Length: 278
Image: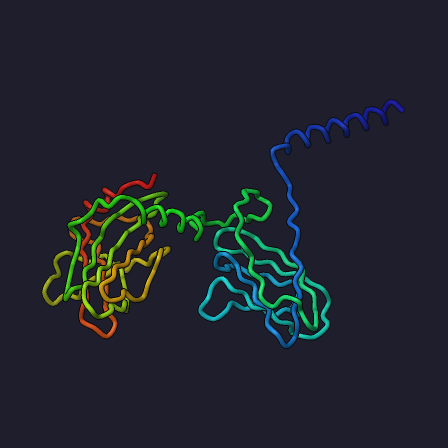
């Protein structure tokens, strides 16, 4: 009897010790959202941010992103009257969305928009491996867009079109280039491409130009056309980098079906003096 009591006491102490060591861990249950899909109609799920990952609980669900749109997921039934299953989606802001999917011949809702809330609860958040997700970059780029201008000398113009690097900011190993495009002509300026690449300052004769293109992580307020006598401001988020004294960053803006091509040369001294976003 004494041995039984001792064992019971030991198990009790072990349980208390385990609970104490795990008291900083909180478990939350994510309630799935019920949706209905059918065989001959498409149900559209509209998310606040781009869909990065989709997991289907059954092959009875057909799921695809809308063509040319990253934040709309389109669903259909692969066969009629399938058994209830589930669907999970993770968006670029790091949130996890869970759904219970049922078959219904006539779904009540064909277009479902998931509205972003200001809730700080971790119940629906699944942290992505890269902290620099779209929501993070969008927030910093928005702040860079309203920072006070501190660069004026890096500019180029042609036939009443002008490109200016008006600000260069940094936060969390990301560089934010704020560009202003002014169209002072009576003809709209349509952008064919806007590229960032590192190149040699001086090209050796008969030697091929060495260029390393840098792909932006995020573009804020991108526009494809600047109307006549209008201006536009864009912010490009690029991964952190510096250049040697023999190289420079070139920003190249090309006009579609036109000749007003503009280039900016950004020296390393300008890059290393990027202003922190507070």
